[in-house]
Image 1 (cartoon, rainbow, N blue to C red):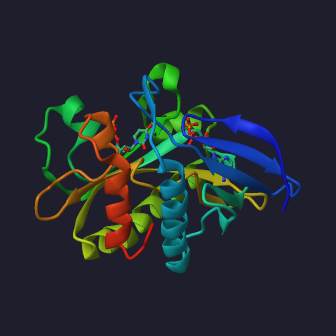
Image 2 (spheres, rainbow, N blue to C red; image 1 turned 135 degrees about the vertical axis):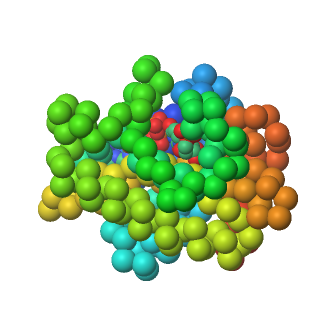
Length: 237
Ligand code: ADP
Ligand code: UDP
């Protein structure tokens, strides 16, 4: 596997083409961003921690029968993944009220959401990732009705697997964001990443925040806390 030219530089990762047209390299940088890229800082070891954490979680999801982009870890900060044609929406599931839901609807942070909520957001920093629904996605041709249904089904399947996994580590999976893409055979596959940058995790006993809210809210010990999350799941970083 040979790394070739840069395809795309996002806020936290750089994507490279490879000599295999079906595979990409994801390079996890130390860059950490919040508020649609308005706040950006480099945090020591964050790239390595997120690369290894993502590989660990994607492996768990594969073991549970969920199709992911997962191929292999090739260095501390890089993974090979399947090249996907990404669908430009974020799929969010919420088990507990927090973040933009609390700001939008004025509900109390920490309210249990039963059944869990599902929301779509358009990936567009300039527009601050507006919330969209199934009809926007189909009308604008971002995905078909069947693909929308599949993304929802897979996002909830991930919830079942990861809620239980984090619970065993004494954590509550409050909410998370997933991105899906289409592979060369037309299948919907989980892409991008699952790390504490893209979910909310609270300690079950103290309700301490163990995710990127530590960075958003200036609480400190960001990477150290991500390492503790990994440690509680049995991953030594
Ligand atoms: P952003 O684009 O939101 O700033 P990142 O810095 O994480 O985010 O950049 C990673 C980019 O790579 C994202 O645009 C994501 O949609 C894309 N991507 C992630 N996984 C894959 C994949 N398997 N195939 C193609 N593109 C991917
Ligand atoms: N999220 C993300 N990327 C985004 C927007 C949200 O990873 O561009 C994650 C976020 O970390 C949280 C969940 O999706 O776990 C729900 O985010 P929310 O809508 O509450 O927005 P926020 O308050 O994080 O802006």
